[in-house]
Image (tube, rainbow, N blue to C red):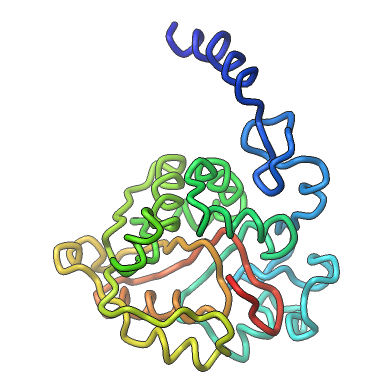
Length: 261
């Protein structure tokens, strides 16, 4: 009865007082916490054939946004960057390409105190991550250092992990991993510099070690660029006894040169 009241009375009243607005540009939309028509066209959701390691769309899927290096080789389902630089995890997926309207959404969620975006963004990730969520014994986010957490007020990856865990009915441990040291912001760094920056930065919280022994862990993050951060996290989980580590991210950077995120 209460749920029906919320949907038939409270919901329309809230929409009247506070019309739904586009997550990317702020224009009014027909759907709650969605995208307007223009920003929807400017958002490249990843569907069809994609790299099984990192979620990068394979040939023809990125509408010209991919670098030539992302082309699939010999018909395989692993992209060239993952062949040349194998990531530290088993399999991965991403919901959207990091660019256009999606980039504005990610930046607002990450740096703009837009926690209200969480549930919609988790819904974006569900189709891409279905098979990964289904085999996950435990879901965990990439952690923030406490200094960065104080500045942002929340860990956007932890919020996505919680939302996805509820939808997939899987256990979640937002404090499974800890950051042992503060790392330098990675904007402008190349792949090698990013790997050096993240080396040894993560560890499994001692009280959670029994939970990961021989288990399949799904790591959640907002953006996958070079994969250095997620590989460092995966390495820490394997050292802690995890049998398998997969990754699911909101957005995948598809350019050879990494922009500001």
